[in-house]
Length: 209
Image (cartoon, rainbow, N blue to C red):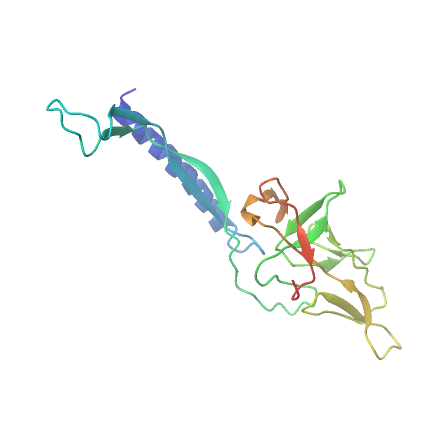
């Protein structure tokens, strides 16, 4: 193939992949807790026609070389964990992470996944779960006779029970954070898995760590 056509093809392929990334961002514009991805590119190898600083036919040092690039490729899609807009929903179980951090949920296989989606519900066992049914960790079980549920900014979950004037505490939520959140592995369902690139989760109390 003609070298110029090959270079142009690498550019078209890279831009097509970039448009796929952008399209996925747009498709998830209303997905709770979704974080957009950014396409990362790098140039390919160069053909060294004339070395920088080499000697000319007149025995002078050339101030610049002649390097022919061979195109471009996409090397990564980087998640941008910037703060989104916080929306009041009126649902006491809808939570949001302001700043860095993730909620922790338990997968059926027993592993822990992480999410920025704080749309929680109560399942048949009274446990707080995501919209897909994954149990929030540490687990919180709401009594069936609870009259109201409140969650403080420090993660404390309290309920009001019949015949009790003071709320009863059920437990405290934890916030997980990573040295490199961009290294988390997206798995769908608004969930991420820890990886060697992200580092291990560092947990703490919301608002205090």
